[in-house]
Image (cartoon, rainbow, N blue to C red):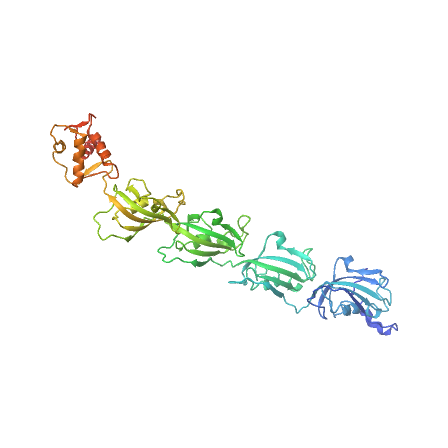
Length: 563
């Protein structure tokens, strides 16, 4: 049978009868580790491997052969007296050779057929573990983050990285090898007691070193093949993430523009830039990398629920940080390779603009001249100066880049609807600031350097105004037209009106303010077109029966349609 050191403990009590020489033990500390955080004292529990030999070197017992280290309490007769005494002061990983005289070993009786009577024994020990029932978790804080707004409490859910070793440095596990954090609730018995306790009060980014005695770890059973029975455990832990299942989003407003005339609500369409990171500061996504804003409806389920909620109540230009617990982000599953399961996400957001599909053009008059006889309306020809920018102040276009102001006939469909509308009912010299939502601007697709779905800001000044004529007209009467129009045209009364006569008459009406030509075109070419319209047989002369006012023509057309 095997001889375990704890056998035959009583044998050495009979030594008094032995007349042999009484020597003490001899201890050779032939390897002492550089660092020794603790020395064996009486009452401590120890685990060690040993070889037992006679003085000639012949092996009579070995814990290595059995594949299990010796475990016992010092000073409680769990081992022979010489080893009990010889192990005092030993450090973990220290190697000692303890020579034990017979009276401190198995004395005159020996031990079965393994150890003859009166034999001096040599024990070669390496200490693997040491603890005491009075021990608690030993915690050493290695580093703490600069700021810590929150630390681990019971019922919190944590994600941490760790290296785990036995007291002698043998690695039993590492989350780094798996490239995956250890995830657990704290204080609910998911973890060993020592960790449940040791993680309390930790901040994200903090590193702690723990030594956990076996009775707060895996105890006398150990765990799997890696953790033997009665093993103290050493953990080196970095806290990566922390939340509580009851958490809501946290919103920190970093920069709030003043004034803020409007805040976003559910149903608005928003454009924003963002940097997205984990709690440990590692960025996993950014709109700046994609070089375009993220555009979406708020509060309609198009985004993870925490962002959907966190983007409500923002101002244009606002910067805010939104911290999302996993249950309002990507949950236990995570997303892709960059967002781990159960991760808290931090979004740093800069709101570029938002609008609602029901928004009208918003007009603010910044300057109105004292005298204003007429205002712009559809069909008028106007000249105006403008600056066009995004709501973040980025200038897109300005008429100051050109030698002359911009010109347009209002209502002619040549400019975006919102601008056309904003230029109406203006006096010459009036200035306006105008906000145009995208559905009255360049729409979802944008145009050139105008981004899709962009809200635009225009600064406008009306430079000149030429009143217009209705669509399809080349000339209108501002007073009643002469009753005998042909007679008025036919100045030499020869019953026919050539272009020259016609032209002279029209110009005279304009001069006297009785009529108006279509603006923004060469008057002579407009008059030529008018003449052509009346000279129905194209012989270069208008006769009495060819002449018809456009108004009468339009009435006739309708009559035909009715017939």
